[in-house]
Every structure is written in C-alpha cells, then in structure tokens.
Image (cartoon, rainbow, N blue to C red; front, top):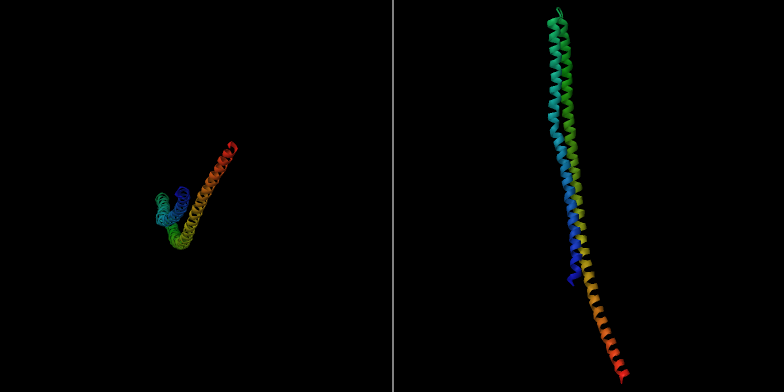
Length: 183
C-alpha cells in the first residue's frame, strides 16, 4: 500500500517546505528593508557633517576673499568688516537651520522607521499565524489524501481479486465446455 502513498506524502512534504521557504524569504526581505532604513538613518549624521563642512568651507572662502580685498584695496577695512559681519550672520543662520533640518529629518525618519518596524512586526506575526493554520490544514489534507489513496488501493486489490476469481471461473467454464464438446 505504501507504494502509492509515498509519492503523495512526498508531494505534500515538498509543498510544505516550499511554503516555509517562502515565509523565510519574506521575513528576510522585511529584515533587509529594516536594515536599509536603519543604515539610511545612521548615514544622516555623516551627511549632515559633510554638508556642514561644505558650508564652513564656503564661509572660509568668502573670508579669504574679503581678506584679499581688504589687503589690496586701501580704505576698505570698515566696509569689509561690515560685509564680513553680515556674511557671518547669514552663515550662522544657515548653519542653525541646517542643524535644525537634520535634527527634524532624523527624528521624523526615526519615527517612520519605528512605525514601519511595528507595522511589519504585526504583519509578520499575523502572516506567521496564518501560515501555521495553512500548514495544519495542509497536514490534515495530506492525511485525508493518504487515507483516500489507501482506500482506492485496497479497493483495487479487491477488484483485482474479483477479476482473478472471474477469470478462474471463466477458465473453469471453458474447460468444462471443452470437455463436453470432446465427449
């Protein structure tokens, strides 16, 4: 009987393995997305630092230009100092806004990551529960299928026995008819 049920059981086992592999792949995909989000958040500090350094270099370049103007143009000291003060105020304002922007961006992105993690955690938990139910139902279906195959196999064996009995009876009748014809 196991000749017919082994392929059925193997098929069901392969299907369950495929379901579990798909589940693991999905969970790894979610974990990857979470890691990417965290990497982006972690890179914001580097991005802010690099941009701040660029702004500071621009300020230094303007200071160097103003120094050159002050040194080469006589009588410009007061005017250059006013321009330098105005430039420094604007750069200070820019750097404050820059820091605030990155602080807000980091905070919002962090909240977004937390919300995403919560949502995907709930989704994965619900999916795991559903897959567990599917696998349980799948195992029940396997049991029913194996039982049905065994019943069909048993019925086939009974039918084979009946066919053999009928063949024996037909052969007996043929032999008797042959004997009667010969007699």
